Length: 120
Image 1: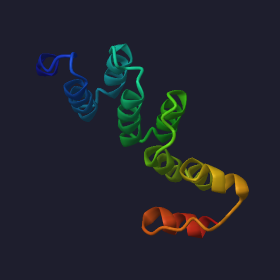
Image 2 (image 1 turned 180 degrees about the horizontal axis):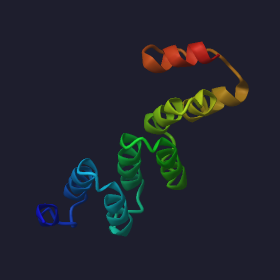
Image 3 (image 1 turned 60 degrees about the vertical axis):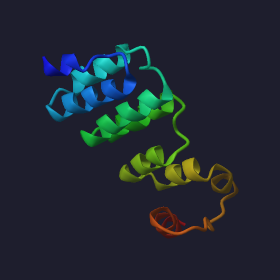
Image 4 (image 1 turned 45 degrees about the vertical axis):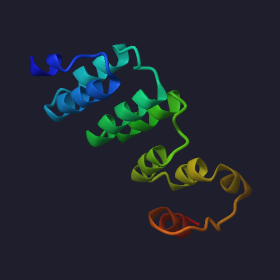
């Protein structure tokens, strides 16, 4: 009942509601609510839903959601792809032109550079 008091009008509050529901073991119900929300078909909503799915160990479904909504041009999708062991797909998301050209020099530092340098 308390979750209902948060309301559905503002996406930010609604997103918190979804996270609370998922944390209470009500992920499928949260996903159903998200799909019926007026903003439920936006890229922002897709990222939220993907995060909930991935957090529940449903990483492939998270990738599918981002792909359907065209939200596949960021580190979130690449991270999920890496979690699935799909390194080349992650590279293509992060560096589409370089992946097509077959280059192995991705530059940069940090987590992604380390993963990409090992992959190629």
